[in-house]
Image 1 (tube, one colour):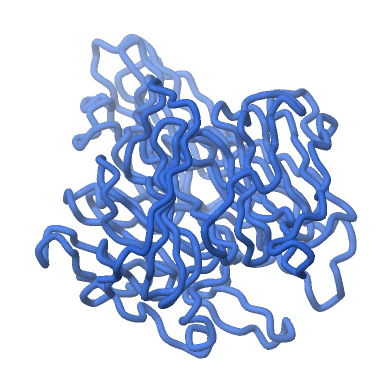
Image 2 (cartoon, rainbow, N blue to C red):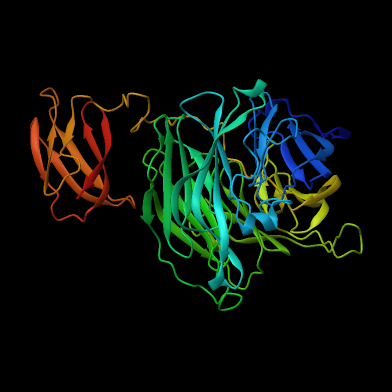
Length: 498
């Protein structure tokens, strides 16, 4: 166990209404191994900064989770899992190994939005850690891309509460995966989870359901036209990496793309489907920028090394609402050095402020104090949080662990999927030319609707009897989602047409 060197408290007015919960608190940033490291523990409007030693380096790719009382359980730098004592967890040494890992294992995974920790819906005290196997792509002139999505399962019920990696680097899906494209959000039932990644240089989005039955095969959507808005930095470098996250209420999926701009989708927490893609071009922007959304979901912030912009997500034309908030002021740590406090990755903290790194190892974070406010009222303060040691551009990007169930029921709300009328049947499934819908006699009428994986309605038929056939032979072979609306309730489900 590493000894704590000293503790600093930074205290502003304490907001008793915002006593922050656990799970994503504290934040672990800083450097390492055997070097300076920092924990930021948020409590209301106060922050306790703990400066200590850590035996594992943390870079941009980091994830951690605590219990409901803000007691740290474990964390990872993308390659190794460490327990609350800063010791390597049993079974947690080098989750994956290849030349890429050998190059970066000391300092940690150099990509944000590439790790996610979520509770196992089947067993309390167990957690899924989702990560990627990254390798060099020779066609990109020594750039990297992910090519396998993995999970490791951590059980905190064993080893005296210090945990153990009981399953290590289990493959989920193999494809070329865009770096920095991972995000997680709770299902509409408030218990299960959706995990998303995107394919590399494409317009396919993979959505995995995590529930008591494990991890489902992905829902794959090709959505939105993919084309170059402006020329890449050079003809061989055309990556599509960028920040990826869900809004706090789970209704939006947002992804930055270094060669195209900002992609915004509507998200259905019931079905896992995204729809209504919006692309906001960002031409002539410098490489290396971040995105963050305000707590109420209205204001989207984009940094691009030397400028910070704000977009109004509630505007009719989001792109036209773009407003310049700040220009980089030239500050460096130490003053006069090459370590400039530029504008880079951002993340929403438990105290509902947004903190920003600099793309350099510096002794500060920038702060947006009132991110729900329009324009300069958001109160962006450059180098507004001073740190006791250098931070290696590390900032967590956790999901919203506190998001509950939606008020409207949907497919899979409880274990028995009880919102579905047990007396309504749709069969056969898989289907070919025809399906049958059977309902109880007491149901006087119903409407059957069928949607493709993009959320587009492809079939609608009124049902007036207790049993009726529905022709689906003209539809493409694919996965669909159906909805039956009767005088009793709504019925949801999946339908495969072969």
